[in-house]
Image (cartoon, rainbow, N blue to C red):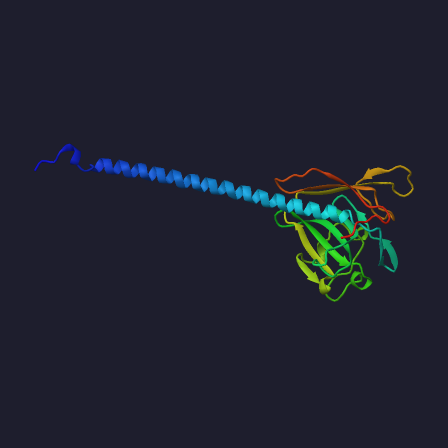
Length: 235
């Protein structure tokens, strides 16, 4: 029986062409899927970095609004805790109870180098003479003005010692800029001015300019007003 034209099967050439087209379409679809996945991962990574930057900024700003103008014992005398230079800042402020032992802490913010860049680290000592003097498991506190330019000798990060009274925490794993400036009246002067360090002074500056950025993530500079005597905000 003769086979009509409409009942013929596909020729080998037609099958090869169809398979080739199907392969090309499949490759294009999977290529687009991979491209979309990479783009989504980049967006997620950028969002995570921005969220980390925002969290660090908010913590620093909140802490500065609660700064206490206090002194601490060191070297047989009482020294003002508040001090800062262009890349480090030390002050007294309260911390939430879940962070460590309740109470006021000496808090030091510093940009510390890593193998791939830099990180922003918070080092804390409970404001207590025994803790500040050092324990068997935690280092003694040394005023920022006396501690040189590196704080890496305070030990490894992400650890809590002395019952939580001492610890080092990474606030921002990737930091590009952590820059500070201080506005106030230095001793012996009558007019306030901006300076890149506030060391060895007994009074707080009026304002602090904070610049904190991460790779690929910028945030506007902030000018923060420190509390005057009796004005510190409690938790």
